[in-house]
Length: 235
Length: 235
DNA sequence: CCGACACTTCGGCCACCGCCGTACGATACG
DNA sequence: CGTATCGTACGGCGGTGGCCGAAGTGTCGG
Image (cartoon, rainbow over all chains, first blue to last red; front, side, top):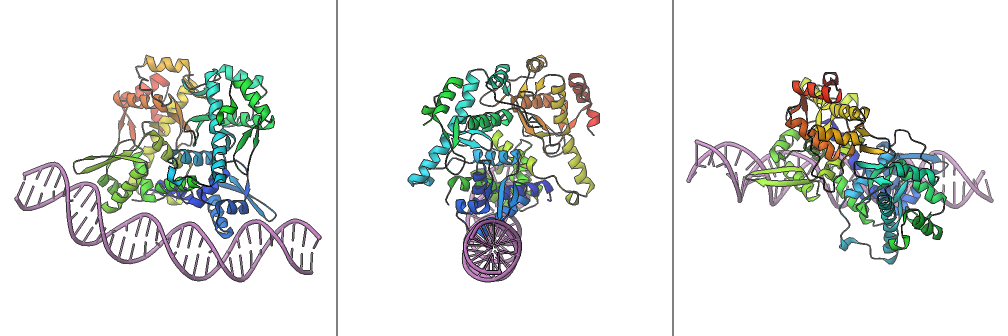
């Protein structure tokens, strides 16, 4: 019956309705820019196919691209695009046992991702959820009247030198559904600042090619002292 | 390269990647249960087609169904499903002028929706955004440290007899992106309670077949006295 | 200026999917 | 119990879209 909104919605959804494009977007959830070739190797399809997919995703507004010489770098267009991918991934049913990867390498990679990773620009996985819950337990964050920082929380960020500038229209805190833990973790300006700080201070380092993070030795100390988190226990 | 999450994500997205299914889900955003026949008339496709679509949507977990006699009632499965549809609809580009409906009837319906409607179980459209902003202006709601009710806000709900019971795992307040206004409005337990109260007290009544609401005369008085909202000015 | 490399364009193949008409089962109503 | 109504199963048609191989364009490095 000709409802134009339905067509727009379907067009947007169709961008993620293909396993190859979906795999690209999930890979790009690490918040970084990938080249077309890297995505081709990651998804296991040919270069021409990736090229077409990228064109569609860029035209659909999900991805932004920058061309540098003979490379085509793409990344998620903005935070809202990342949220879209995240919320769909979080809502998708968990992978049944029968379809789990069987190679040792793939299992290891999956475990690393579940332990700690970035979700666009903030911390996710068991580490991200543990941080969020520790902050709630210590009264820095509350979900009593909505997901928000308390005064103590604001003081905590200032005290530890984690800057919360850069506020445009973006919310200071936001709840983001973790797609491995199926619980909420901290996102928004505060989540991004904390993640940036953790990387800059060497509490975590990027590990592997994608989103995965590894907690360093000094990171274990820092997380324990600051928030009482036992990073060893994250598996 | 065989990433099972990508397949799950694509499968979920493909449910909304068809204009007919997307139109059904948008219609169901009114939070009520529709019969298969109503959806067939609404979308303009045949009964067999709707039947197949519904089966897919139910199996995919987006819709829940109840069979009563010879009728098949379907509704959005839960709040998270509604959120998914909403966030995709909000992210989809606005309808360009060229594709706007031209018939008087369709234009009227579009204007009514933009003025006031339900979004699953809370208020949306210009009314929903006006309510949210009025609450922020009056210090009942804040977005300073995240989107949350203030103490004054909690008192306001209690004072006006809008019950906030029923808290399970669901957040008390949540921000929901309005897909006509492109601004956030109040959702969550508080948003649902306010909407329920507005309907029960006769401040708004359902209008037309779907999500649209109409502000009654006593509603105009109530919104003005309670929150200083001039409902006439909503268009 | 030439070869290596990264990406793109084109043409064609194949699979899938949305749709309908028809036929059928199941339920309400007189 | 007949009839109208609501929904479902099946077969088939047509369009779309994902994929690749081959050829082409632009860029970097020597």
